[in-house]
Image (cartoon, rainbow, N blue to C red; front, side):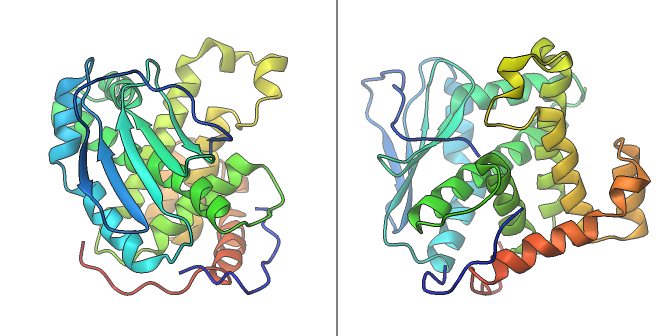
Length: 273
């Protein structure tokens, strides 16, 4: 639960929009899978990605996260998580409606992106599932910052990435959380490699509220290592392309992030999910 009444340490350390963009219209009824508060999930049927929509609806990971969030975070505003067709790969937090929208289109993009890296379909699905979890946590970061009226310094998108990483790595689950962060980082890294606009960024990319995808890739990997600076993690992160000079700063960076959010977030109860 957020401690709304306590002072907040400056975060030097997610895309949010003030009003909700149009979602592709589908007249079939939506399915509300969870109606608990403050977080609930609505699955809109998909016209374009029916298999993806069924896989997401039948999956258990997001349901585990929603139960965890409802047990952990006390909010004055209810947050609805919506899966929908959007007409483009996207995920965003709509502040005016207090909704996190996860587009089936972005899940399809994740499958395509990881399909260029992995030959095994199970590996593609695993990586896409992990990347979707991280993107969800990023938008959750925007939602929690907004719902609690937090006024933070720094780049909002970086703040949301940091809160996503903090929530993920602080959650007392048995295994897999580092893989979620690494696959989330890899998704951003692969986008950066495949987008011509990011290979030679112009003013439009440099003025955007989001850091470049490859920057997000290295930042998230840095925080992952900083949370657990073991020799094995060091080897893995350096193999991903990070220099030892940058790596040496990561434990301090993550501890700054953790200390700042620890002052705002109560210690969650243990979970076996």
